[in-house]
Structures are given as structure tokens and as C-alpha cells.
Length: 447
Image (cartoon, rainbow, N blue to C red; front, side, top):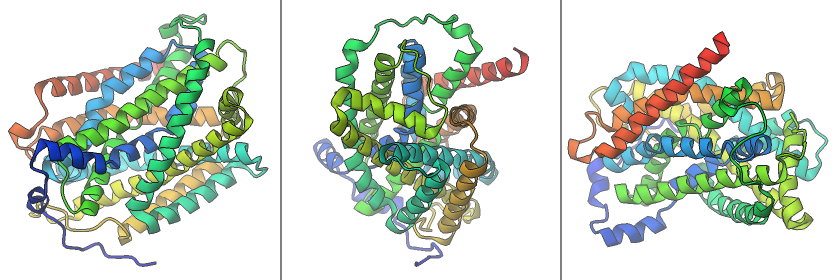
């Protein structure tokens, strides 16, 4: 194992822009070849939020929560888009943007806020992946043991393989899962009761339902932290290509992944609604049991063997999702460490994240803490998932605010900043997420 201190000669913004495509036609042609971070975004997003929460929402409430899911995806778009937008505009990641816009103390507070959430999300991804693996292969081992083993395996692949390996694996498996999910959804459409009402207590006046809305919204389509991951993956893609991708290329790449996550979220909800809603199915509280119920949706529609193959692809996507977070989260914290320790006069970070000592130790720390969580703090699977998604939801308006003011801050030239519509859209999202967070605390504390 070779560890580097991280100091390398970095390409400057000028180096990148000199190699940037100059015509719109060349932009479109080259952007099709440079898809990667957007699909990696989809691979990281299509995890517990889709397989667990979307399916569960459809099973318990039919189509009643479909508008909530769609609204969450639409509202959060600017916050996620600002990640690759910032890279396309400045050549820097959002972490560097935070440091230059708000100062090093804000980056330090960001680490304190996000490190525990990152650990919890990693544990949630690992236990979900373990549940699917245990269901497919009828493994008698505890899900916590399987999850710990998966964390170890993904950590090794992440550190030694790096960005290129993750991107290649993810492209294949996310396409496989997408084809299987779209096919299954098409077959279940005749079974769906096309009603947006629910026979339970009034939807938005039920405390249990409000908690479910918070959980679903928190990770739909994903944690806003993924916008920072996306900016770092875009920066890594620039290095592999030897040039800085244009804003247009970044947008095509990002939209391909974002729209894909939205479609798949709706598909999982429709499958849960068509096959589980109104059937008096007692949803399992354990990871293996819940995964078995989700996989049975595919098997009942497509047949045993085809369902088995789709289940394998689902496992593969969860595996690459776990790889993505075990690369992305240490990458964020390493970039944050570099931003804090960077000389204040430097315009660009000159240290390489991949295989650096800080990246190794941070990856080791997250993997160890996540393993401890799934072995000693997991408890009831569904309860744990709600707890994780609630933490994510509370952090969402904070990260959305940081992203908004970073892309409109001093590091971005005025004529390159987002347009008025996108900024109003972003502010609406921040206000909405903040109000929902306040409402959540009010319900928890006073009702």
C-alpha cells in the first residue's frame, strides 16, 4: 500500500479552460463521452431512500405520498445542481468554495455537523446491502456481521481502486437496475389503485404520517451532502480527462443522473403501492426481512429466475452505493481538512486526495465507526432508518443555504452566477426545508 503526503502539482483553472471545448457542437459531443459523476450521483442516491423509503411509502399510503416525493425532488434540484455548476464555473469543489466564501471556521463547523451523519448513513447503506445479500443467498449469519464485512471490502476497493473503478462499476450496475425496475413497474401498473387519498387518519394531521414525510423527504432523492460529493467527483473527472468540463457538459451529466433518480423513486413507490398497499402486509422491521419483501416484488412480476437476476443487480447497486459513500464521505472530509490547513494566500488546493494519508485515516475512521454502529447501536431497522433520515433532513436547509451563497459569492464572477429563476427556486427550497424542520421540532416537542 502506497500512501502519499498529498502534495502534487495541480492543474490551474487556466490550464483547464485552455483545453475546454470551444463550440456548442463539440460540447454536446464530448459531454456524451464524459458522463460519469452524474451517473455516480444516481448510483449513490438509489439506495435506502428508494429501495426502502419509496417502497415503504407506497406500501403504507398508496399514491398519497407521491406528490411529496416529487415535490422534494423538484425543490432540491438547485441545491444539488450547484455542486457540478460550481466546478464547471470555477474549477474548484464546493468545499474550496465554502472556505473562500465563508472562511475556515465554517468548514470546521461543517465537519462537526456532517461527520456523525456520514457515519450513520454509511451504517444504513451497509445494513441495507447486508439485508439484500442475506435474502438472496439465504445467509444465516447476522446482518451486522455481513454489513461489517461489506464495509471492509468496499473500503479496500475504494482506497486501491479510486474514482475510476467506482465509476466503471456504477455505470454498468445502475443501467441494469434501471432496466429491471422500469420493466417491473410497467407490469405492476394494472394493480395500482389510482387514488391520492388514504383511508387512514387525515394524511397531514397524523403525527406518524408527518414523521414518515420527514423521513422520505430527508433522503429524497438523496442527502444534500451528495452535491458536495458531486463537485469532488466532477473535479476528479476533470483530472482523469486532463481538462475542465464546461458548465453545459456538467449540466447534461448531472441531469442524466438526477432525472434518473427521480424516475426510479416514483417506480419504487408505484411497485410498493401496486403490490403491498391494502394487502395487510406486515412490513418487517429487520434489514433481511424488509429486503426479502422488496425482492419478492420483482420475483412475483418477472418470475423466479428473472427476479433473482434483478435482485443480484439490486445488490450490486447497493454495493456500489456503499462504495460511493465510502469514497465520497472521506473525500469530503479530506477536502475539508485540506481547505482548513491550506495557506490562506493559495488560490487553489495543490494536494491530491486519492491515496493521501489524510484520506486513508479518515476512511479508516468512518469504516470503523460505521461498523460499531451496525453492531451495537442499530436496534430496530426501520426506526434506525427514520432516525438517520431525520438527521439528514435537519441538515438539508443548512447545506442548501451554504450552496446558494457559495455560487452567488465572491468566487464566482457576476455574469457567471446562476440566473434569477434558479436563485428564486433555491431560496424557495431553503425556506420550505427550514419551515418543515421547524414543524418537525414543534410536533416532537409540543404535540
